[in-house]
Structure formats: C-alpha cells, structure tokens
Amino acid sequence: MDAKMKSLILTLLIFCPALFAAQPNIILIFTDDQGYNDLGCFGSKTIKTPHLDRMADEGLILTSFYAQPVCGVSRAALMTGSYPIRVGEPGNVKNLHTVPHPEEITMAEILKGAGYATALIGKWHLAGNPKGPENSFDPALMPNAQGFDYFYGTPRFNGFTVYVDDTEMRSRIMRNQEVIVEAVESWDHITQDYTREALAWIEKNQEHPFFLYLAHNLPHIPVGASENFKGKSEYGPYGDTIEEIDWSCGEIFKKLKELKLDENTLVVFTSDNGPWVETTRAMKPDGAPFIPRDHSGSADPLRGWKMSAWDGGSRVPFIARWPGKIPAGSTSDQLLSTMDLLPTFAALAGADLPKAEIDGHDASDFLFNKTKTSPREDYFYYVGCLLTGVRAGSWKLVVPRSDNPSGTGWWGRMIEEVSEIQLYNLDQDPSESTNVAKTHPRIVQSLMKRIEQAREELGDLAITGSGVRLFDEGKRQLQSPIVKKKS
Image 1: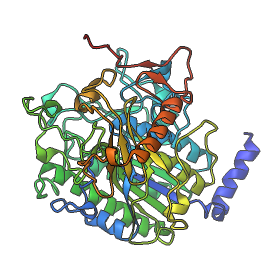
Image 2: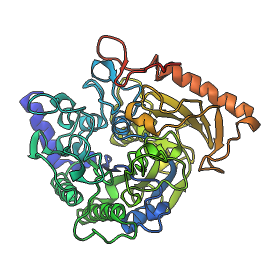
Image 3: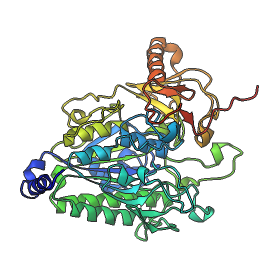
C-alpha cells in the first residue's frame, strides 16, 4: 500500500465515521472452567451474578450451547470456527492442547481484515509449550501474529493445582511480546488487572469498530479474588472468583454506556468448557484427594464435567446482548457452538470467511430472532481426537469406547467405559440417565449415519479424516500415541 492510499484511508477514518456505522463493536467474554450452573440466570442459588443476570434479562440465553471439553482444544475451535480435529498444527502433530498452524486463519485475523481494532486480554493457550534456554514461545504462534493488535495476558494456563505453592510451575504475564511478570505468585488480582486493561483499551479504540476478546484465566484453579470479593460468596473461593468476574462484566457495560457505545456493541458471554470437578484423582473412589468442591463449579443438571464426554464437559452457559438487535429476555434451546461465532462475527463485520472449510455457521438471523431455527443441525462430541457421540435436535447418541482410551493422554483418565450404544433425549433427560436406544432404533440408525460421515470427513482417534488440514509434510500424528493393550 503506497503513502497516498494510506493517507486516504486515514482521512476516511477521521472524517467519515459513518462508513463504519454498520459495523458493530464485538466483545467476547470467555471464562475458564465455568460450569453450566454457575450463574444466577442458569440456576445457581449460592453464586450471585447480578450483572450477568441483567445481561440475560436484556438479551438472549442459549441453553444448548457447546464449546469443547478441554481448554486449549476449546480455544482452537473458537478461533478457527472448526472442530479441533480438523485444524492444522505444526508438524501435523495433533496436540492434546491444540496448537493452530500459523497458516490457520483466526477470528481476529478476519475482523482485523475488515478494519477492526483487535485485542486479546487474558489467556491465549494456543502456542504450545515454551522452549529453548529462555523458555520462550514461538512468536509465530502468539496472539500478535494471529490477528491481535494488542495482547495482555498469559500465554498458557494459570496452573494445574489447587494452590500456587503446590507446584514449582509459575505462569508469566505478557504485554504483546514483552514479559511483564515473570512468575505469578497470586491470582487474587488478575480479574482486576484484566478489567483495567479492557476498559482502557475500549476507551482508546472507541472511534472505530473494535473486537475485544476478554479471556479470563479464572475460575480455573488456582482460583483467586481481590479483597472486595474474597470470603464473600456463599459458595466459597470458587464463588468469590465468579462474583468478581460478574463485577468485571458490570464495569464493561458501564463503560459502554458512558462512551455511548452500548447500542452498537454485541457482547457475548460464555465458558471454554465445563467445570473441573475432580475431588479425587480421576474421580476414583480410592484416588488421592485433589480439588475441594468449593474450588470448582457445577454443571447441574447435566452429567459429567471438564474432560468428560458427557454434556457437562462441553455444554456451557451462553448469553448474548445487543440492545435493539437481540430481543430482550429471550431464551432458546436450539443448538449452537463456539465454532459458529467466527462466521457470525464475520457476517456482522462484512468480512470474508476463510477459503478453507470450517464447521461454523452464520447465526446472526437466529440471534436477531429473524428465524427461530439455529443454522446448526448437529454437534459432534470429541475428546481430543476421540469421537464419542453426536447430538441432533434433542437426541444424543453415545458410541462405545474403552475406559481411559489410549491416545487421549491426560484427558483419558476422565473417560469411563461405554460398552454399548446409548441414546438419550436431552430435553427429557438432561442428566443422561436413561438409555432409550432399544426403543428408538430408527433414531439410532440415523445418528449412526452422522457418526460415519464425521469419521470420514473429520476423523477419529485412529482415522485421519478426508477434510483435515495438513500444512506440513508427513502424516498426521498423535501427541499421545495409541498403544495397543496387551491381551
């Protein structure tokens, strides 16, 4: 682009803001390990969330919204609009936490290409593990190389133990490529920090359309809350954490109204997966004690939790609000997923979709109540690369699997054996307690056809699908190889 063209674009940006009037601001608030039941508007009696409850009153609740059952995998689906098993990764290795190849096109790249300012404040977790003597991350895999103008947060997760001092592992906080905090010793003020950064960035970018991805590290363990919230929730430390995140959402809504951006801003709130409920290691009756119940959430009335193949692992709370566009006080049980947000945001921004095949659908007409029907017909349940089932309408089919399947790595410890095909009507039986496969053979047969199509196109643990993206030479490999059990 020459200097004259840059000058013309700058002039248009300054003197013709009406050009962008049709492009809404987009704020995506993404929590970590928050359960389906962990908001007042989703049924919690002990966690107080007045700001998010008001957001629901002023917008739309989806009760059948799906992410993925594990952190990094879920973020890959969100950013690419694709099932993680389809996403290309460096060296064609399917990592337990997906690492999108630099040639993958992200949500941020699409919106940036449409003229949006873009920021990630919070957790990234799509750059793999740090390497080399400086323990650094590949810059090509980091947010600034994947469409985000600004990044403030953690490259990976905040930890994997109940308390920070339970392990030598420490997370760092970065601003773009600069390390701001080398080793976080307490997560008590992270929500305050992210809120401050988010408000400042919104104010700085209010004159043109913006996309803010606010990806809270919490309530993933170790949880934390500042002095104003610690010890205040009836639920305990986990509840303190959620109630501070609710406060953060209230501050964002206050800022939007103060800047007169409220009526041109779509705000979406959801979680990356279900709650990490593991009171004993792998939930074994004789396992070592692990996470106290007041340090993790609830997926009630759903069965299961994070890393499981049941609905509690991947079905998460969802609220969307855009005054004047999304009807207030609406609720729907139609299927939708994080993969559908990329094409939906692209449609609102007037942006082109990636040329590569994606699995998301534009749901803007559905969100705006122009149609009562979601564009998503089905959702496939994957744990890593293991296909465990499919949902279509109210029906969920679960296919047989072994206990702790080889090839699923650390996630496998949360997968129990299923010895026969199971069918559940989730409208009538959200806890997946009554198998009705024998009384509905035609539905089983229909859903099995969808399973077979998914195995063909997307793949399965030992199957490379015809539609997966392999950017590098060589065959697809699993980070955690399949090992045949000795007979």
